[in-house]
Length: 140
Length: 136
Image 1 (tube, rainbow over the protein chains, first blue to last red):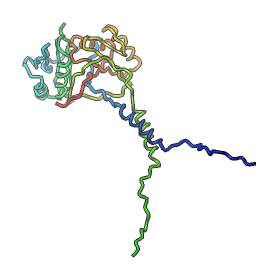
Image 2 (image 1 turned 135 degrees about the horizontal axis):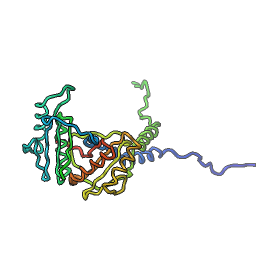
Image 3 (image 1 turned 135 degrees about the vertical axis):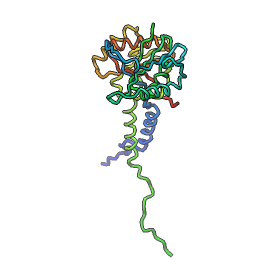
Image 4 (image 1 turned 120 degrees about the vertical axis):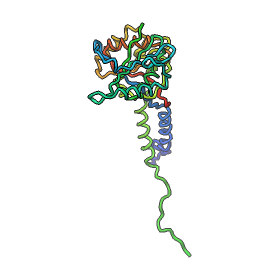
């Protein structure tokens, strides 16, 4: 008796196109991946009830009004000049016993000051050596 | 005269391991891809130079304030008075919580300082003002 298969079916999965398929998937994930880095300005808010007296000579007041004009210790200063101005004040005030700069920069805004102006002023102050930055509450 | 090559070096680049390499790359990108599950409010961030990168996202909670002063936490629009209970719950679960404030640049400081007070109530004192990074 002659038993013969008429056809010899190929029982392997064709893998020749596998790299192409995987390439396509790879390109899809390459395009959709967004390694988004959240960036921003770090601040630490003061604790409640932690009020203490500070020598007024160690405070540099930065006032920002609703139209974006800035006063540094009662002197009008252009936004871009704040960092230079504050830097010279920080250096002239000197360091304390722990080697930290003494000057505390207090940023005070008005309730109508745009947030954008505030961030720009904060950014300017962050560019200086001042490490002690305080946010004063706007007078409502 | 007869020239004969001494060695018959194969000129093909071996491609047998190509799928393996591509698979490895594929798996890397699949793992690294994070589909944004929450887009928050449509806001325009202010720009700043002295920015710092946020640490691992596990310790970050986001508070959004839109242009009209609407506040959003966890994909829900909430009232200003609900901010501190929600955030103090989160703080109880994670003591290293950092609050990322995504605030539109047109928002008035009155709202922002109200939010500061609510954050102090919730004892979440570490904050980060989300900004775009610019060189200027």
